[in-house]
Image 1 (tube, rainbow, N blue to C red):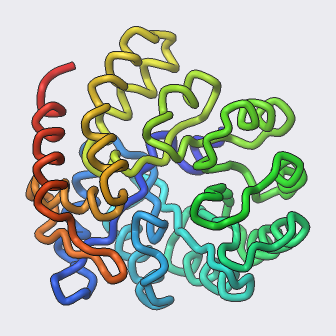
Image 2 (cartoon, one colour; image 1 turned 180 degrees about the horizontal axis):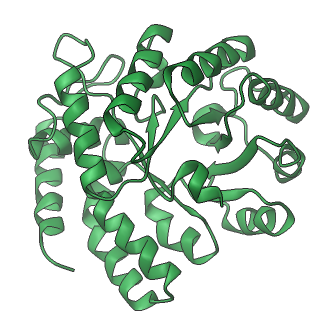
Length: 296
């Protein structure tokens, strides 16, 4: 099953950093422990929420190794390896495999805006670089290029391309691709987790899951068990936190602020061009965290 390759309750993990911008090893260990304790069964390392554009190749591999060593097989370790450079992405994929990754997350090439044929060539080249299963990452708001339905259907023929993290938000296209291919879908938009799960998604890749992976686990179980009343109640309980994390500045910034506020990581530090949350955002976040502490 695909959830054995990637998990179902997957978290797009932040990268804990010190105020001077270095990787924070104690924060990383504490965060992995927290994610495992709250029911996360897949951890994306070095993805968008992990501030991948500012990670060096050495840091990316080091993070994969650290998370793999800390998790001891209790969660799938999914390495974000996508860049706008196919050769560099393939190199990162090989380095991630050597560092202990269980799977790869491959974003559509950004900035260069290739043709759909170029997207296919890029993804197949990177998928051919290792023996690891690949989750495609479709997020046109960041990359400038969407993976079109025909492209996803074409890529589904590759034996190692097994899943899609959909941050496009076209639910009809998602169910259409699910009907036409064996690709597993993962919701990459926290605001739409329930909608995607109800339409057949295997799971979620969640930013808010850095804080509430346990609530996401309950949501997945409720949908799989056909208990939509409970699923709706869970989703509604998360609205304030999803709003605060995803709709103020951006997810990586606010997820770190939430984790620091809860004492899980020691610092909310981010690397430029990101900036830490201003006081009004922190006030909104504190209010949201208080609502999550209440029972559903």
